[in-house]
Amino acid sequence: MRGLETTTDVAGSLTETLRRAAAHERLVVLCSFQKEESVILDELLALAPHVRVVTIDTGVLFGETLATWRFFEEHFGVEIEVERALGAPPWTGPEHCCGSAKVAALERALAGADAWITGLRREQGPTRAQTQLVEVDARRAGIAKYNPLAHWTERDLWSRIHERGLPYHPLHDEGYASIGCAPCTLPGDGRAGRWAGTEKSECGLHPTR
Ligand code: SF4
Image 1 (tube, rainbow, N blue to C red):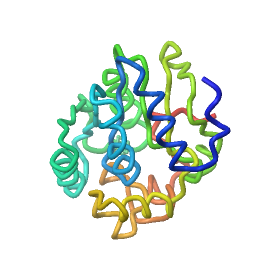
Image 2 (image 1 turned 90 degrees about the vertical axis):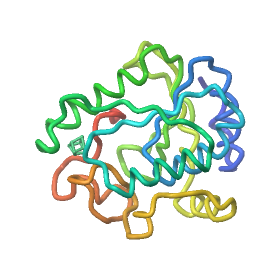
Image 3 (image 1 turned 120 degrees about the vertical axis):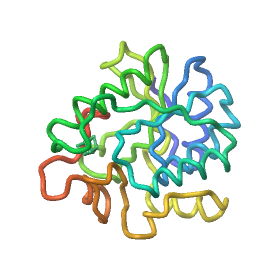
């Protein structure tokens, strides 16, 4: 799983990492319709047309997220699979909802996969500062976890989105740097708007190191 960390150019690291991921037969990319997925899907679908694009619907997503879902399908020409957070109450507090429903939905999405791709970036905060381009997902029988944007900054993302005219989530223009479920997301930089006012900064999909 080593060998890619020497790549310093962000565009090169994205393409190289996605090429490597594309060699997996049972590849999944997790999509939450944020700016990171705009950039990943733009390159990934040409390199890995067999990839399953999967989103997790908690039932309390922003209306703008549902609209962006349609824009992504139209623009990228892909049907996005959905895993619903079954049994999730609309809102029971961050200690219960994420863990019991959202993480379980991810497990179903990754059942049978031999690799998955995420939009994690080091710049997003301390819990993500050690993100590697390629990791072994110890939680899931050692399948590969690719984080092709590990070294990308906000500026890199927006340059790419504007250069290529990619669709993006409209709430980014309203000050939401990171967008999750509506009851738990406020405007803010980095991940400051997620579960604001609590100790929580991760939903559990990506265990912290
Ligand atoms: S982000 Fe909030 S609403 Fe969404 S699953 Fe987690 S606790 Fe529930």
